[in-house]
Length: 155
Image (tube, rainbow, N blue to C red; front, side, top):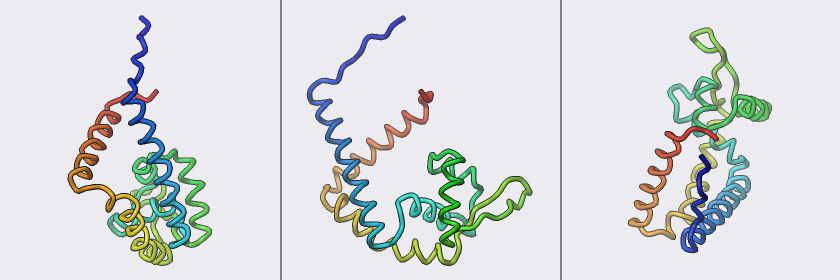
């Protein structure tokens, strides 16, 4: 049976478009800042942050891909570029199946150097322009959407 379209009303449409524009502009602003101040791309920073947060600065490739919502192919290509810059290295998995990735000393130094400026950029462009109450509300909204998406079948 065909499902009827539930169009967004004017307020919903305006809020959705504002959110989309904000998310796109904020991501682009933070990407430029991270490249300028830290010499890293957002994907570089995401990979390095995941690794430096992990025990022994090392994770299974499939866990990195799942955590970043990347395909194995995308992760592999990106790790090739990062490995060429000596930010990460692939190592055998201790269990003998597959590979792990770990950050190098240069990778740790790069993310450590980039983090303060990135944190300041996030604060300046996002955190400090929202009240604590609105920030908490946004956090609850994000959690509700993420929970809904976790239960949703992929289209």
